[in-house]
Image 1 (cartoon, rainbow, N blue to C red):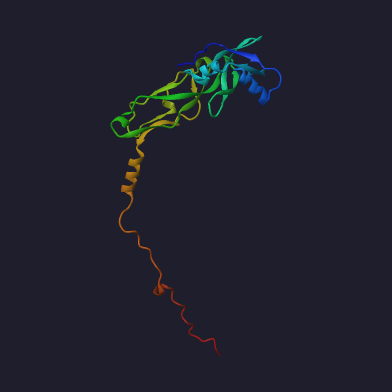
Image 2 (cartoon, rainbow, N blue to C red):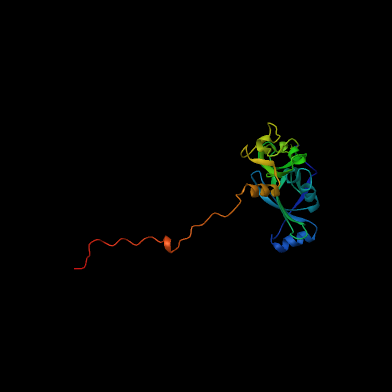
Length: 230
């Protein structure tokens, strides 16, 4: 499912100093600092509504969402959120970076992978499903960016695996990286692995360690038949 544009974000050009005190005043006013760059144009410092940004980040397509950025007194451009900063304790948005998007040029983005179903190896064979890769890099036009990739794992048996080459995709989306990269597999539970290892380990007395005693010391070299004493 491709990411779809949402309602426009309104931005106002920031003027004056760009220090911590200025950023704090912006947040006190109910807005957050932002920057938009890309498309061969100069970066612009803005203020935006954090509620509109949060709505995008929590949408189905998340930060891969393409939206209309309208700058007061300027033109409207397609944009995408490429970085954001949250307050570490309360999680409030502090700052975002946005990138202008050219809809006719391919771009590289990371797309989340969602596993669907319960594998046979989990239901009937006592295995566990382990997801190794949670997102994959793809290259495509902005209008073709998937919001996520759904992978049906219900047919996986014990030791069965899904690789990047098995992910659903169309000709408009190119996966980057190795086709044989592991996405998910069904394995035995850790306790079972440890139990099998214990059974396979040799049992019985510990191997005998040879100990040297007086009788084991090497014999002294035989005396020379001829005496060197004159």
